[in-house]
Image (tube, rainbow, N blue to C red; front, side, top):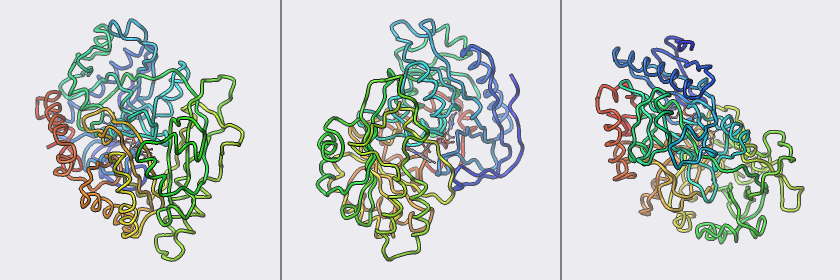
Amino acid sequence: MPAPLRHGPREWTNYHGTETAQLADLIELLNSSRESGRDALREVATDVQALLGDASRMGAQLRPLGAGWSPSPITIVQHGWLVETRRINRCFALGNDDVASGVDASRLLLVQAGATVDEVNDSAEELGLSLRTGGASNGQTWAGACATGTHGSVLTAGGIQDHIRALQVVTPSGIFWVEPARPVMSPAFVAATGSTIFRDDDVFAACLVAVGAMGFITAMVIECVPIFMVRNIQKRARIGRDDVTRLAEGDFRGFSRLYGLDEDPHFLQVILNPFAPFEKDALLRLLYLRDHDPSIPPPPRPLTGAGFDALTLIGKAMAGIDLFRADILQLAMRAGYAVRRDVDDPEAIATWGNTTEPHNPIANLFNGSVTLTRSDLDRAFDPLIEAFLSGGGGTVVTLRFMKRAAGLLAPARFPDNVVIDFDGPRSDVSHRSYRAVVARLDAMGIRFTRHWGKTNDLDAARVACDYGDDYRRFRVAQRRLMPDLADIAVFRSDPLIHLGLIE
Ligand SMILES: Cc1cc2nc3c(=O)[nH]c(=O)nc-3n(C[C@H](O)[C@H](O)[C@H](O)COP(=O)(O)OP(=O)(O)OC[C@H]3O[C@@H](n4cnc5c(N)ncnc54)[C@H](O)[C@@H]3O)c2cc1C
């Protein structure tokens, strides 16, 4: 297997141009071409352990990098080594010999850490499987997306990390196969991957959403569901204040009856114009489960798109304009949802993988979000919009809904969650508006969490407070996986220290 490429010292900037690091080395992992997944995992993990060992001996700090999509500084390691994983992107089917007794291998997929969500979708579909949920876009790596608890708006699912059943995690001291206490993979499989079995419920739960603070993840076993399709309804509609109450109560069927089909939606997303949420059109997206029909051809990609780019670009233009903002934003929202699919339009049906979209980078993006108990949405909605506008506002406000997600540090930690995204141009106005939202929630005594990968203004004290005992368990689990403090030290970075995830 070819040795990792070492590109040497350089400046590195993340995908959206929000953060820059002066690196001592940019290192690119190269993949194993061995046919068997077990062998490929062993070879890659051996390379990674060697790198971690070098870093430890030289006192260097090393950070695993996914697609670099997180606008927050969690990928940044000033004067350290940034290790790209994008080429470690193979997916393998698993057989009954690979799994522990009593485990059904037919829905499992072995995924290398750097495979993008898009690549995992494709591999799953080839095996007649689907992911249960995911984010709006699909260019994140699997490990990077899980590391921050990436989510969409599937009403019965948690975050993308909920798919994970086992992980291969590398530290300077070892290559570990981390599973919950109940075995998932067979001892022969684990041994062939060069890993030592590490079965521990809390260590597993800590690794699911680890923000890069639980070692270097090289591969995961994920559990999918039988392949399904979704019917897509995407439209502009004028919703009322009572619809917010309806959504806060979880009456998604009632909402769907009014604006979509008279059936339970699988996915429901509402994009609002905060300058006039009920006087201007909202953008609605509703997806409904359908049986898989292989005769339906894949749509030209993307099937639909949330139009974030158009919205963000117009938002940038709006940053200095005070008059007619609601109308200007409405024009942008119309452009964003240029393709509409209403209830009586020809049905737009696609697999789950073909409903997510690729993304082109745009600099100057701001995105921040808050996650709260869904029922708090009703009392929080008006004050939050008012707070957002008091700072000047951004572009759009998006409501997404999800169940409690797996992982000690999963932001979706309430039984039923609403995630409210505040998108906008990367400007003081957007940031000030987001801060006003956070302050208002605090003033109202409403509990909430924030996305690790987005702008969040978090610090160690706040993280400890938001996650309480789960934060304490995370730190204990970290020491169980890496009892030698020198191992943890390799993964140090100022942003992670600031968050209290590492010392
Ligand atoms: C266009 C766009 C759309 C988005 N849509 C959504 C959305 O719909 N829902 C949502 O919730 N979020 C969304 N996000 C946020 C995004 O999903 C997260 O920021 C995600 O973490 C990015 O994945 P990545 O592969 O780029 O990870 P990176 O940003 O590269 O890394 C994230 C963290 O994971 C760590 N990490 C990466 N790989 C490994 C590894 N192999 N082992 C250990 N640690 C690792 C890194 O060190 C870092 O701390 C979006 C972001 C963008 C830019």
